[in-house]
Structures are given as structure tokens and as C-alpha cells.
Length: 328
Image (cartoon, rainbow, N blue to C red; front, top):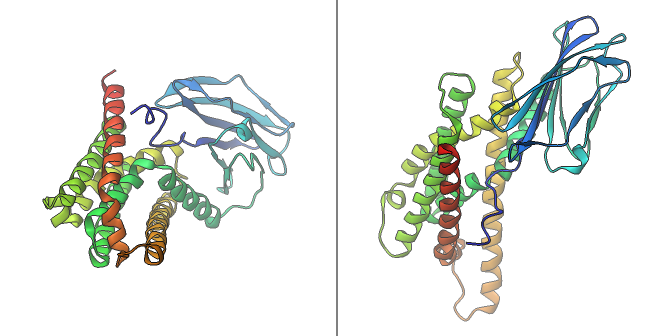
């Protein structure tokens, strides 16, 4: 148990920078700075030298500090460089967005390896597609809780047809609630959602243990049904992250669609990596073991029990942590 304290279910949320032109050369700036344990990360927006800014206002909203100020740039912003100072020292990234009077929008994803960008007049759908697709892939691959839920489902299905049906059900469910919550049709507090996601992982981990003991619960008999039911919940978790990042108002359907596609691609990459590992174990076993494992699913079955204990323990920790955060 001493090892699980530092383990987090999510990396720090990305930062969000919005620069909106309200008059020629005048911009309203919104800067959402990620926070850790209530303390703002050491990140700062550096606008081009030609820009003069007012004193920012700041307030803590959820897990981030939201700052607002106005900047007057000598001439247009185009051709200048926008920098996120301090980003190179972090493990987070920043979604930057410039909206201009003529309706042109530039969307850029900044990382520790690339903490700045040049403001340009050119903007289009391709920038939105690239940015939100990458954010979707990143979110699922860094969302350890979602990945452990998928891993536990893999231990339950036992065959390729059941795996395809289960993953399809999970995808359909979280796509529905992701869209509904992001578009404002459903409003659910994020903290209890995160706690229930942890509970869903515990439930599936227990079902995996029951299966290894020959007791087939509903998750083992109908994994697609459990995947769909809990997928609705996980979609609300995805939506919480996407709402923190923000969506381009003129391209909400496009950004939402490609964020979701990115989530799916990241999920499939994880599944492929897991089965690649299982195949490797099987390959080695065929050459070294006296009684080699016959299929990749045999490998999955052989590690299901210890894996379920690890998954369940982490989920129980997250449930306690998130429930405490909800009531405190």
C-alpha cells in the first residue's frame, strides 16, 4: 500500500490560453493555469514585445487559476511570438487559441519541447483536427484509471468476438455522454463522477477475481453490458477534461469529434500494446516452457488474478482519495 500514494490517475490538466481580438490591435486574454494541490504552476504568458498589458485578475476555479487581462499591441499580433515561460520545466502542455476580428482562428498545442509559437493570420480546420486529436490520444494514454478499466475488461472477455463487442459498447457509451456533457445537455459535478469511475474499476476487478474462481458474474457473462453502463460514466470523465481544456466556439463539432477519435485511437494503441506483451510472453513460453501456453488468451488468463488485485487496490485508493476530496 505504501507504493500507491504517489500514483495519480491523471497527469496535470493542460493549460489553456485564449487571445481574442476585440478591436484592431486590442486583445482580451484568458489564461487558465493548471494548479497542483491548490498552488499555481510556475507558468506565465509572454506576448510579443509590441504588446502592453493591463494588470491581470486571477481566481481559483476547480483545479486551475483563471487569469484575465487586456493587451494592446502596436499593429497586429501577426508575426509576433507567444511564449509560455516555464513550460519547459513541466510535464504538462498548453492549448493556445487566437481569435481575430475577421473570424480567423489559430489553434496550437504547446509542449515542454515547443513552448512558443508564431501568431499567423492563417487558420483552418486542419489545425483544430491536429490539436484535438492529439489531446484525445494524450488524455486516454495518461488517464491511468480509464486504461485500468479497459485492461480489466480484457481479462473478462476471453475471446476476440467478445472483445470487439465489449470495446464497441464502451466506445458508443462514452461517446454519447462525452458529447452530451460537452455540449451542455447534461451537467454533472466532476468530483463524484471521478469517484464513481474509481468504483467502476473496483467492480470490474472483483468480477475478474470471481471469474478466476469459476464464479461468472454479470460482467463475465455480459461484458458488453457492463462496458456500456460504465462507459457512460467514463464519458462524463472525458468531458470534464475537455471542458477544462476548452473548445473552439466556431468548430465545436469538429473539435469534439476528433478529441473522441483521439481517445479511441489511444485506447486501441493501449489494447495493441497489451496484446503485444501477451504475445511476447507466449512466444517465449513456447520455447522455454515444458507445457507452453496455447493462445494469447491463455497468457491473459494466467496473469488475470494478480493483475486484478493490483487494479482493485489502486481503484480502492482512488475511491477513498476522491470521496474524501468530495466531502472535505
